[in-house]
Length: 254
Image 1 (spheres, rainbow, N blue to C red):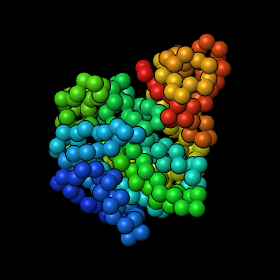
Image 2: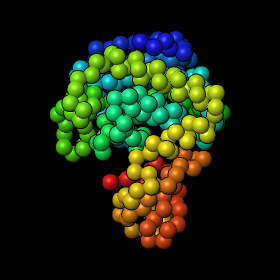
Image 3: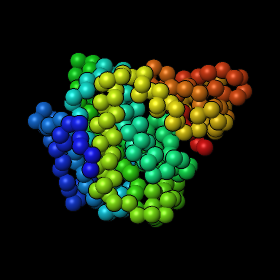
Image 4: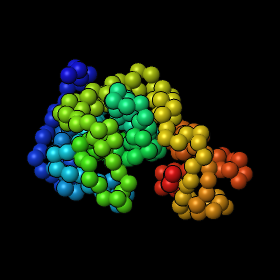
């Protein structure tokens, strides 16, 4: 196991409703930086919005990290998503190079979703002073509800993974990515994220939500970039113009 950059404080739970909820129930001012809550049986995992993260007991990685060492302005909260996405990508790239980051917070292996990230920020005086990072990664589970179009490392790569080994690899790369951000800044982190973005520069099909762009609800376009607000930049095929979307305004279908 590689040596961590900062000490971690691990709380291991046999069963929990949600690792993010567990951290939120504790008074944050008393919680140590790099506290990590890991459970082998998360029964009510949270996804983005009203989504849930369903997971089979003992087969996957579900954990949350509490951070208060990096303070962001409120309009830069997306950076932590870049950091975590990059770190997961770098961890899994060792096992297979067909791994991609799907904007804004999914991990894709051979066109199948195998992981997701949920970040909850605590804001004070227009600054993010504490961050709860929830990570769900499908590892050894092989049966999934078809409506979720999910898969796992084992199902795709046809091999078993040691959960503990993979967990500590992920933590190491997350800490390393935080260090790289603190050393080289936002541009360095954003460039890696953009270079490993799923379906970048390829024709894709999108659903436009809250449509103020005079485009059809379902339309073709090409992901071109991520701007300095963390928004997705898309070129639509019907007019060849670039448009900016926040994560609640557009959805990549395929």
